[in-house]
Amino acid sequence: MAQLHEYECPKCGGALEFNSAIQKLKCPYCDSEYEISEFEAVDSALDQTENEQDSVDHADGADSEDSASGLVSYVCKSCGGEIVGDSTLASSACPFCGNPVVMMGQLSGSLKPDYIIPFKLDKKAAKEALKKHLEGKKLLPKVFKNENHIDEIKGLYVPFWFFDTDVYADIVFKADKTSLREDNENSYRDVAHYSLSRKGNMSFENVPVDASQAMDDALMESIEPYDFADAKKFSTAYLAGYAADKFDIESSSCLPRAKDRISLSVAGAVKNSITGYENVTLENADFEYSDTFAKYALCPVWLLNTSWNNEKFTFAMNGQTGRFVGNLPVDKGALKKYFFTVAGISALIVYLFINFFLG
Image 1 (cartoon, rainbow, N blue to C red):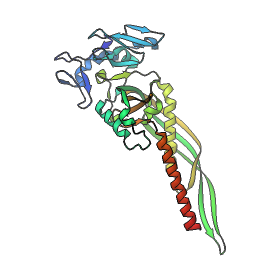
Image 2 (cartoon, one colour):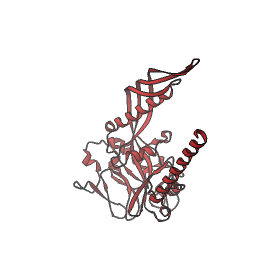
Image 3 (cartoon, helix red, strand yellow):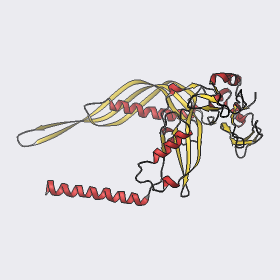
Image 4 (cartoon, rainbow, N blue to C red):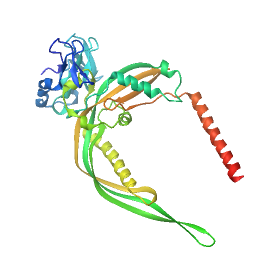
């Protein structure tokens, strides 16, 4: 099986790309459109290819690999140019002719994703989201909007594990209950202390954890959630025109992070169900997990790298929902002005309270 695959237009031979607006493959040259299902034969061999090689050999089909640097090189079938990437690269574009390519060996056997959540938003939407993200930021340097330079906008399918599990929770909270009473001379405030025990079962579906060492976990969690209802059976055709990585963190290593998130969700939900008490705090919690199952899926992310004033800034947008996150520079002069303004207002409020109510 050819390991480096290019999706060519049956009519004109042009390089097809997945179009997020129509959810089909489209030829940028003759504008022909094709359903994903028309290319099912390309992926049929992936189900029959067993992955019997170690992680170094997962770049099967590459023309050469530098074990020292971890880089893998391929030869573009269209122009003969060299395509270089790391050992997790699963799809990309030729830097010379721009044709999208899929590294089929990275997606075969046990490396084949179960699902893919296709892009719904394009590069233009990512640019507009960045523009909107900069609006209304009072502490943002005024020149940043005009002078920051977008170095790269990349549509990337990021590998995720999605976990289904059942959890039995045994949680103990501390809480107070206050009552007021008075006699002829005094008023009293009585505080009773309680230990509240709650037990029960909850089920979770599709709890995501990114499975790429290269991606910042906090950044990926910030652009969640993904609507798994839009997940499709995996096909390499969805990758045409986008970059993609295969997982390099096993599901067993991602499971603890999923359990931590689930535990926090369970404890929070149980706490919110407690009424009639005050100062409810967690004292002890035990969780037992069962029927845990992991699904491997690729999720759409737009990554935007910008530079300004010799600094690099990275932004990320959920390619399905449009949720946008990223850190921004702070105008130190504006920050000081804001601090002293707030401090001055606070001092004025205290002064007025003392003079009008206590004076």
